[in-house]
Amino acid sequence: MSLVAIGINHKTATVDLREKVAFAPDRIHDAMKSLASLTPSGEAVIISTCNRTELYCNNSEAADVVAWLEEYHQLSHEAVEPCLYQYQDQEAVKHLMRVSAGLDSLILGEPQILGQVKQSFVKAKEAGSVGSTMDKLFQNTFSVAKKIRTETEIGAAAVSVAFAAVSMAKHIFSSLSTTQVLLVGAGETIELVARHLKDNGVSTMVVANRTISRAEAMCEEFGATAITLEQIPDFLPKADIVISSTASPLPILGKGMVEKALKQRRHQPMLLVDIAVPRDIEAEVADLDDAFLYTVDDLQSIIEQNMASRREAAQQAELIADDQAHQFMEWIRSLESVDSIREYRTQSMAIKDELVERAVNKLAQGGNCEQVLLELANKLTNKLIHAPTQALTAASRQGDLNSLGQLRAVLGLDKD
Image 1: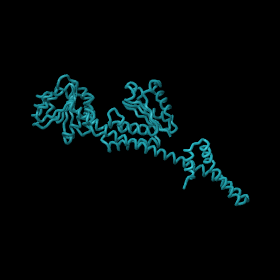
Image 2: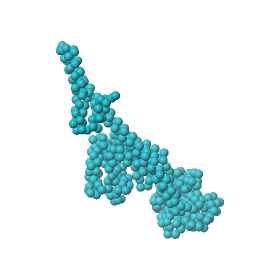
Image 3: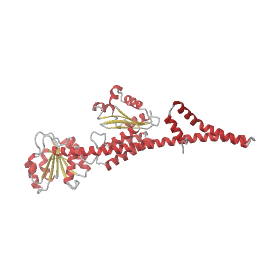
């Protein structure tokens, strides 16, 4: 068996090329069937995300897989080959485990990739391109990714501004499920913040944006309420948490507006996180009692510390992946030994049955029992030692002492 992994990712290729080798969701089912048809085992899984396209095949030649990828996307070998990486057997297994655990991601330790790998595996099963080996490989991989997240701190620390903002809120409020949140802006960062908030149980969110239609589009996904920037003073007193990220050249929340809101709140504390550059919230807000203001610089220092923590955890994770990949290959080799033993036993039994049948026929024809038994023993012995004798002779003639020693050990010739 030769397990092969062929891939291209954010480290090896531009966005333009990654887009060209990506597989659209509505085409990946047929693509997996096509790729699997090239392999004797009929096993293939394709992982295709915005940052990577990877092909995993069992019992395949790497060159055949590369040629298929180029032909499928109508790309030249010269355009694709320099950007590809290739792994085989244990290294292929380890790579899949590293990818699933977030060790090969743009953001070290990010958890989304595991879900994407699981989705790819499900699609491959639906396409009929998963056999016993691939099934065992991916199930093991999912267990390893879980083991890495459980036994290391690879995913414990926030390493994105959005995640860091929500993590800070979690440290200040014992539970986010009872908090009311005002999000200012409706761009990609605020959308990610909203997703993290929803994952942490926040159910009451208001999104303020200059363009109300953009805010409404985002609110549909999170069950939030959309308002204009001009309506912020009306909603601010209800907000326990305010997170802002716009492209405004001037502050949107001034000291006076926040001070008035705090009075209406009867000085219940308010957390304000400003992740905009230039700032959305006046720096003087930090001088107000019961207002806790954090800026993108505050979050950045947290992120840098957390990245260092993740890199340390990644070293432990690499050891786990290496060990588990080794164990998987031992399982593969054990299957190969079982097949060899079965084949050897079948061959030996066939020889025995053939010679016994001849002996029985001779006895039935009145042959001498002693002679028939002696002939059976001699022929059976000669048949069984023929192949080992040839192997010993060849090793001796070639001076291959290593093979000769292994053969002697297997045949029990060096027993004390």
